[in-house]
Length: 282
Image (cartoon, rainbow, N blue to C red; front, side, top):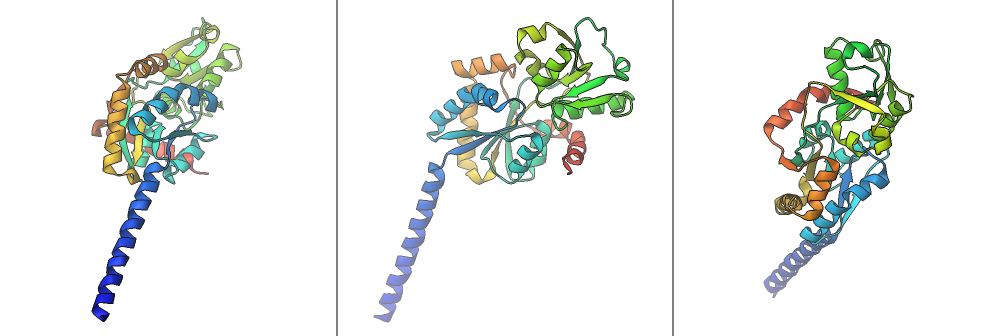
């Protein structure tokens, strides 16, 4: 009888453990996925722009998806490191930093990210030397366009705070608008935000590009989702590009499409990680 009771108790224990495991897995699957998006635009604009993507993911995964962001780049990256999100659209330099922190890189946008200087129309400013003594606006000192652009200027012999003044703005659009109204002499941005500003602002500025390219914004998944869910997310993202909504999204944003992240992309971005880490220090 004692052996029978022990066997029965062990069986009940295994059943309880199995029930707990199944319940935990069901609860995790039922939980909405948290999609974090780098605050490169206003919260309202981010939510509006990414609604088609959110809806497509919900339909493909059979699971609710909620969009989150943060007040600034530093706070967003801290939340990303802490695992506050399940899926992530972030700067490529941040993406490289997160690969070693439990994040799986999936795609980056197909459009090449090349820092561009925006200047007043007909100003004639079209070379680094002409930026000496100027006020240059940044969307955020931690944005990849700022980091890559400032490093490019340094490679040309121009140092921030010595040869020119840096003025930080809340978004790319705000920096471009400041140039349009004469509050700044130039702004450092990329082609995609430039396409998204109002036409009346766009008419008042001109642009000239740097000569360096890096991969665009990265989409990542946290490893806690597990390989099966991560692969479903990967396939859902691939499918998005083939839908009418996805085609409109990539056309209107200028992102063009998705490109898988490979070792070459990671290698191209590594030179900018130390500067990003330095700027992230309190």
